[in-house]
Length: 60
Image 1 (tube, one colour):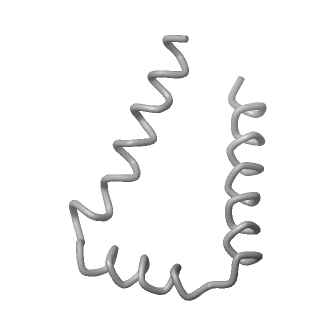
Image 2 (cartoon, rainbow, N blue to C red):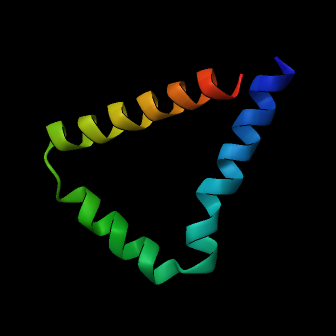
Image 3 (cartoon, rainbow, N blue to C red):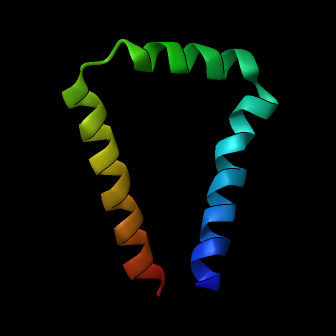
């Protein structure tokens, strides 16, 4: 359970970097994301999950 919480904390730190360092770029990227179709967003989510899983298997 501790590992999951550490991973979640690291994810939050990484997710917070762009809005902290460059709020304008983050706002522009988020604005473009809202204009994508559902299928495109799902594909991006699936790709992200697959890359994460591959990294977990490689690094373990």
